[in-house]
Image (cartoon, rainbow, N blue to C red; front, side, top):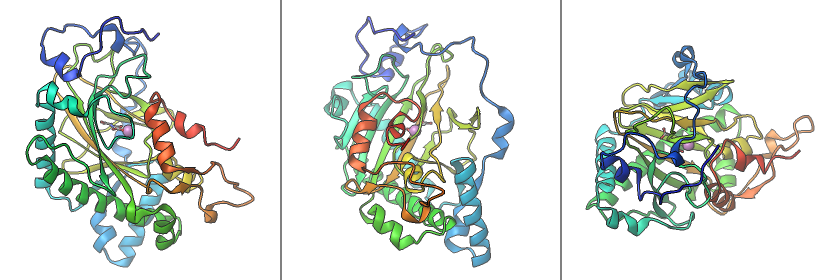
Length: 351
Ligand code: OGA
Ligand code: NI
C-alpha cells in the first residue's frame, strides 16, 4: 500500500543520493513487492525489431518498401523498435548528455527557478512524476523542455540552449522520417496526415530523466508502467540500461545497441490509427550502482489540433474507437494526473 510521506519530500533524488548517508529508501519510495516473481522474459530481448533509417531515406525503392513493411509490423506487433543508421551525429548526442549533466550538477537553488511549475509551463524541473497528486515517489529527477514549435531552454549552464537546439532539430528530423514511413505502411497520404495533425508546427518536448543509484532498487522504481502522449518517443540513454517494454503479458529488458535510438509509439498514434498501432506500455527500473540518464523526445501533433481517428481507418466493421480531443487538453490532463498505464487514453475510448 502507498504510504503518505511522513518526511518532507527531497528537492531531488540526486540531492538525497549525493548525501551518501542512505542505506535504505524512505518508505514513500517503496512501491514494489521485492518477493514478487519476475515478470521479465529474457528470451524476448533478441526479437525486438530493428529499423535501418538510412534505407528509408536513401534506399532503393524495393528496399525502402520492405523497410516500410517492417516498420508497420514493428508498430503493430510491438509498438517499440530500435533505430540504427539514423544520421544523428554522435557528437550531438554526447554534447547533449554533457549539457544535461551540467544542468543537474547546478546548485539546487539555481535549478529551483524551474521547479514547482504548472504542468503546461514550457520548462519544468522536478522529481518523481507529479508530486502534487502522487502517493508514492519515483526514484527520478527530470527536466522537461518544450522545444517546438517555440523553443525553450534554461539559461544555465552556459551553452545549454545551443546544444539542446541541435539535439531537438536532429531528433525531429528522425521522428518525421519515421512518421512518413508509418503513414506509408498504412497507405495514408503523407500530405493529408501532415495537415490533419499540424505537423509543420508539431509539438516536441525533450525530457531528461536522471535516475541516481538506489540503495534498495528492488523496492523502488524509476517510472511506473505507462504509455506516452504524442505520436512517437525517441529515447537515448547514457549507457546504463533500465527501460523495459511490455510485449504480450511479459516485460522485456531493453539493451540497446550502441548509437541507436529506442522508439515507442504514443497514445496519439493509437488514436489517429483507430487502434491499428497501439501505444506501448513501458517502465524504467533503477539499479544500486550507477546513475542512469535518458533523454526522451516526444514528437506530437500541434497543440491546437483535435486528434481523432482518420476517416480512412474508420469503417462500419471498425467504428471509431476513440473520441477526438485537442492535443493541448490531453497533455494537460496526462501530465496533471498520476502516471499509470493507459489511464489518460482510457478516458477517450468509445464504449
Ligand atoms: C519517459 C520514459 C523511460 C526511460 O520519459 O516517458 O518512459 O527509460 N522514460 O527513461
Ligand atoms: Ni515514457
